[in-house]
Each structure stands twice: as C-alpha cells, then as structure tokens.
Image (cartoon, rainbow, N blue to C red):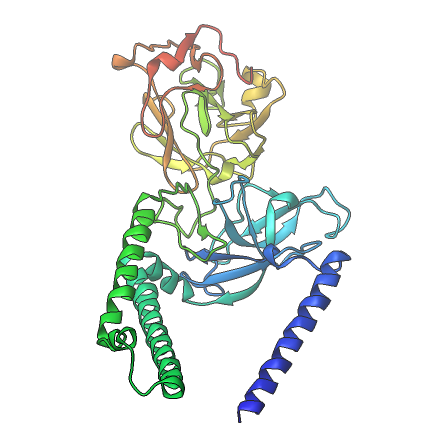
Length: 421
C-alpha cells in the first residue's frame, strides 16, 4: 500500500512538472499569458443580474480583442480599485471592424440604458470567463475580524496543534527506540520529556493570539477609498470595505475630485433667466453647461430641477458633450437663429415637462439622481440680473461649491450675455 501511494505521488508530481514546463515554454514564446494576468473581482451591485448576481466572484483574463456580447471588467477612470463589470453592446466607429475597434460601449444587463461614457481598449482588464455565484459573501465574512478568526485562525490553530502533537510522538518514539538499544534505564533528560502533552496547547494558542493581534491591527488600519464603484476589485479575493456606489439601476457616474478650482462635474456655467426676445409665445431663455468630467458624457442622462422642484430631463434627445466643452440648451433651436449666436458649440433643447427658468434656482442631477450643481440668483445672493442680462461663472467653469451647495462669488452678472464663449 505504501509503495502504491509513493508511486501515485511521483506520477502526480511528474504530471504537474510536465504541465508547468509546457506552460512556461508557451509563455516564453508569447503563445500564452502568465497566470498573474488572471484577475478576480467581487460583484457588489445588481447591474449584471440575473447573469451575475450580487455577491458573486468573477474571474477575468485578457483577450487580444473583444466583441459585442462579451462581459468584461474595466476601469473607467484607470484607477486599479475603480473597476466595473458590464457587457459590451457596441463599438464606436473608430475601427473598420470589431477586431480593430479601440473604443467600446457597455451596459449592465439590468440597466435600462447604456453607460453614457465609452471606454478605450487600454482600460479593459479582461473578459469574464468564470463566475462563482454567492462566493463573495464568504469573502466578505472572511475579511471581518470574527470571520477571519473563525475560518482562518481556529483551523490553523487546530492544524498546528495536531502537527506538534505528531512531532512530539515521533520524537518520543525515536528516543524510546534508542533507549532500548543502548540502555534499559531512561536518563534524567529523557524522563523530563515525559510531560503532559496538553501543555503543547500553550504554543499554538500563544501563536494564535499573536496572529489575531497582528491581523486585527492590519484590518482596522487598512482604509481603502473607493468612490462610485459598481464592484470591488481585489486580486487577493478580499472584499473592499463598503463604499458609496451608484444605484444598480443606473449607469456609472465619472469620478469626482472635490478640489476647489475648475469644476470636476457637469455644471451650469451661464444662465439667461429673462429676455425680451421670443420664439412664438415663449421667451428665448437658455443656459450654458460645462463638462468638467474627464470623459465625454451624454446630457440625456442628466436632469434639471427648477426652484419649484419641477424636474425634467436636461435635454430632449441624446446629446454627447466632450470633456472640457460647452453646450447651450434652450426651449427651441430657433433661439440660435433668431435671437442669439450659438458660437458653433453643441446645442440642444430642454426635455419636455413643466419647467420654469426664472424661479431663481436651478439644480443639476447626475445619472445616479445626486445633485451635482446648484445655481441661484436674486434675494440674498447679490446676483440680480435684469432683462437681457445673464449670470456666468468667472472664470468659465470655476466652482468652489460642491453638490447641493452654492457660492455666489463664483458668478458675475453679464450685461451682454456670451453663450458658448
């Protein structure tokens, strides 16, 4: 039986060695990627349900090209911990075929619309080739202190204790064998070895206490920031601490850096609340927005609130706005042919619904329905534009207030409005 076990172990070792040698040669020749190219991520939202349920672990592997229908993990911002897993829906027309396309459109299976920002191929981490449902919950439990103790420390302590006990027995057996060969009376040193084996518990218990202290310290001091993520990323299978995430039913919002200066989100840059120029029976009012995000966005995914809390879509149709660019939004396209010059910037019309531009307050909402910008005039703001005057950020795009807050010093009153400039 012992010979059989030895033979099996030898054959198993030879098989593993042959496989590793073959795989190493393929990696050296560039015919295969190294194993570290495989990445694993824990899904924290339901944007890919039911194909990938919340709490699943997905494994990805880089591909030479990606096709519509592939589920991929990618980083929309390039940050290692800002990772999203969505399905490719289409390619942007910068390649003749899917095989040469470098820009992709993505969408969560459970989301109603595509992600409003496209991604470039260099941001793709890999294609999902394996999904393990619900395994992420175990990962989460393991990372918590009590889970780590129960699933890691306790089993390790038991194994260490059993191994020490076996070593002790083997050591005593060897001594007894030597004693039988050389003496019939055990020496004082040998007698001292006959202690209570339960005392060996002290060693693994002390070791366990040491590891608990060390790992607990590491756990509580390990603060990882992860903003606007749909999933947690970790090559070591560890689940990140809970962080602010978009609702599973919406597309991803670009990362916001709250540093005073030029806006890092979409903001209202200029507003003309009252004008004597009319299109039909409606005033030719307008507002100008500035895209402070680092990527192109679709204005259709944003919403606008007036001072009476009437909510509409910011624009009525799909309108893409590049990073760092302006767009003009009005009630009618005729605004830019009969009343004002659009100065060759992107133009669009307000979304339908009850809305009033002259209520003294406007608020912008992102695709996650979070307020990202507020503009007010009149009253205590000190901004009192009269008819045919606008209020505008000075300089363009400057924003010292974030979210649902407003700072009047960011704006000036323009006697001559400057749409698109």
